[in-house]
Image (cartoon, rainbow, N blue to C red):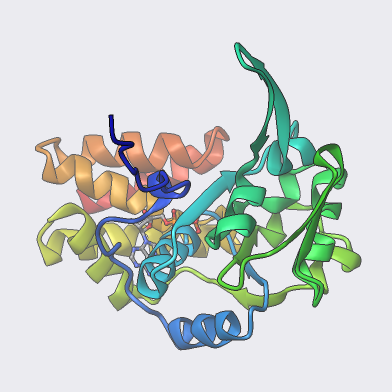
Length: 270
Ligand code: ADP
């Protein structure tokens, strides 16, 4: 019986992006990201939630032809969750790469979303990977992994969340600041993402803009994510005022004064 040769399974298959993610540039961020990646510099994207950081990373990974390994960081996330662990199965024990190791070994873009949420030991493992060494010490596996030449590290965090990254961590990154897009871009994004008519999208964006006057600080304002949700509900047939209540008013705040203020704005519009 002749042996059948099989191509090795693609370890990054599930992380490849099939279609171009829509992203509307706001400035020179696409060229800046490309230049930083060409030099293998790790990138830190900072900005309030829902302003387009994740979508930008998805778009750039697709543009650069890189698989995208995304990790949503959380307070229980320790170094082992990023690096990997030994597993016991029927055949004995075997090492399983964590998402960071997988990306570094095979050459993917690793996006650590809301890095500040991770435990300090998880941040420390990034250090040798995020400076000129580009190595990942896997002590539990007895391996010093040299990152694949195409490996790219990108992290995000919200500076207004009240916690700061340690200088030893943040100074290893090139940082790009993200703000909510200008009004015309917001309208175009809402139209694209929901299929809503331009005039209706302008109303929603106008409502969000007025909340900025109510509250200082962009993280307090209505985000693009919320606007897109409201627009999708309206495009799906929900009455606009009801969609605003669900996707904007109630999602925005639990404080009665803020809820009342936004309700008054929504009542005036719809
Ligand atoms: P963040 O990662 O900053 O929290 P996201 O990237 O998830 O925010 O953005 C939330 C949503 O807003 C996206 O799913 C997308 O619909 C929309 N969005 C925001 N900015 C843009 C942009 N510049 N181009 C296209 N869509 C955008």
